[in-house]
Amino acid sequence: MAAFLVCMTLMTLSVVTAQYFGQPEQVHLSFGGSPSEMIVTWSTMSTTNQSVVEFGLKGRPMFTHRASGYQTKFTDGGTLHRIQYIHRVTLTGLEPGNSYVYHCGSPEAGWSDIHTFTAMKSGTDWSPSIVLYGDLGNSNPQSIPRLQEDVAKGMYDAVFHVGDFAYDMLTDNAQVGDEFMRQIEPIAGNLPYMTCPGNHENGYNFSNYRNRFTMPGDEDGRKMFYSFNIGPVHVISFSTEFYFYIQYGIHQIFDQYVWLEEDLKEAAKPENRAERPWIITMAHRPMYCSNYDNDDCTKSESIIRTGLPITQSAALEPLLYKYGVDLEFWAHEHSYERLFPIYNRVMYNGSWDFPYTNPRAPVHIITGSAGCYSRHDPFKSKFASWSAFHSLDYGYTRMKVINKTHIYLEQVSDDKGGAIIDSMTLIKDSHQAYRSFPQDKWFDVKSN
Image: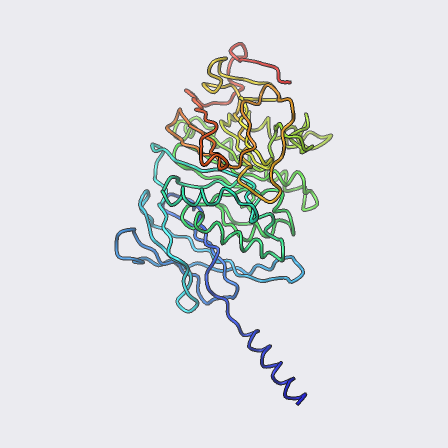
């Protein structure tokens, strides 16, 4: 009898071991290197023989095109060392501005749900609509239902997620990360989901972030910082986390800084700025904030703003100012805050009545209130003069790049049923390095 039980136990274990998990899940998109490209990324829990996307123009016979890619093995750093396979396929030859239907997987393993996307329009004479937010978790993800509805209505051309995903992707041996990627699939499977790393991605040297997302310039881990163009905008995504997790290599700070200056220098060339005048950045931890939590941005000389201690090297604020960055998006603080144009803690408004018309410094927006388990970060009782608007409502930011001189921003409050609680139009008649403006035309108001 004992021998029989042992035999049955071994048979049961062999059956469990032989289970196959090749069904695609966690599907998400990202922009490729040109408007005619789109990258599809997904996961399977077992290896498969193929990584395939079948796609075709929406409204035409389905799946008239087929593209193949590759898979990489990802082993989570948790105690179980869970393994999954990340599949990446780049679609090429897309017709810019046209809508496509697709699914991904393989004939032998199975296919994902059917999703749609619109290839990026070509050129610079069109008006991208972007939704932006940071700090969206698996628990208390309050903004997700409203975001899903917006995406289903076709309101946006892309998502910018400004760091902190799932809270955390590595939790419970990365099973929380898996569930979060499933949660956002109705959004990210239908819109390019452009990202930057946050502090909650730091575990195991940011391995969950590095492996799960596919950004332009993906070679050598460069997805931690990259850039791309959309309409009249040059977008730069970089990592603030190098400054706080030096144990992973201080060289990363300087590698990024050198890359960032070269990218800005190229974008700021007169011929490039004439074609694509707006320069917008996104990174996780802000330079300024009005929150009461002792974060880096609450300090007068924050590392992000003024550089590494003692040496003051790799300071980001002077670099972004030097090349005339127009808008800087941040998150990390679980709140929304819009600043007046600011540099070195001094406001440089365009004028008293129209601060965002031809400002003399970048405009900062903090949008970290999408919803997560750690709730809100409270504000101080007294705000500096550079804080134009602030709210603790859960929600997200919408940006409409109207043309080469106007950008419209609005903040959606999920607490208030989707009401717009803040809006602003940034107007720039010319785009150039701020230092080239005559000093006597600056509008200076000392901050508190």
